[in-house]
Image 1 (spheres, rainbow, N blue to C red):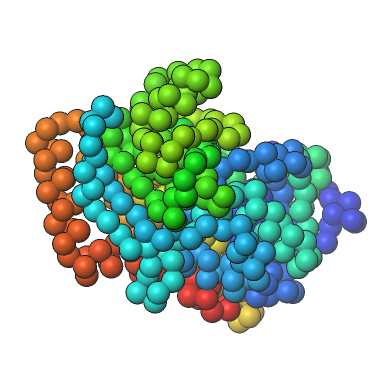
Image 2: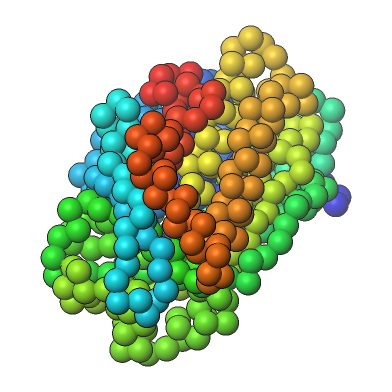
Length: 415
């Protein structure tokens, strides 16, 4: 791609350009600027300015992610609208089974006594991070994407879709699982589709959930109910893609009847609130997380099955790790876009990401089937885990985001 010479207004060199203003891109920018105010950071997002306000989904923020948001001064704004997950149960049955035996139960607290996760509305999380970014002086251009880039010695020239060109020391792609920038950088991926889609919606119910999360393993895939404030629950419902598309297209009565078959009546009558949507599920793992002056974070680096609810938290780990690597390098006067600096981030994050991708893939293959011997084996295995407190604590620590060497922000410490 040909690059025009930037105007004088555009010529001022930036330190970091981040493509994608979802929560991972925003968290990366806020983490860097919070620790190193001298860094000049720009966020660009190809989506229309108000599109994030239409996101009706909610996300599970692990305890480590909450510590990071607290350290960044964001959690106080979110706390009143966050719902702690107090406990969790796991069942394994068929849709038509009259009884769903509980194979596994988890107390929802970590070894430190804090909730292992909170449910937060995506619009609240995105809005709080945006306001913090504005307070810190991070420039945000909405409705503008990155159309191309090329390295130029100690900098990288970034062409924007509005015709402008910016020069920066580091370009970060946080533009999602179908990352255009990843492709432009020539980074290959390991990828396959599951033939499943995830249906997401919010339901209102008559009786309180008391902070309980449930995951029902059904033959078509997991059906998770996650507690929200105000006697509501977030539904993450996996079905075969053709069935998911049919269900989302059905009228409200048929959809709610099918939902009730899976949700049950334990919380009384249920009613769907807001839109419902489905998206295809697959596994995507980037072969490289970095190139000279270029790094991937979040779904641009990895897209995994939602069976363990760890997609957002993997992205927060990326944000915390990359911010720490960049900030510490800048304090030492090192080149933040140099490959040897960025490779420290890649070493930190790639193994954990591959491990989680493989784990969710195996779990999905193990539980998304109706083969009798496999069902008996996994029921036996879940029962064994339920009787081993130390093993259950290990799984809680994994879900809380404390496994492995955690970046400082995930420990609640400043960079």
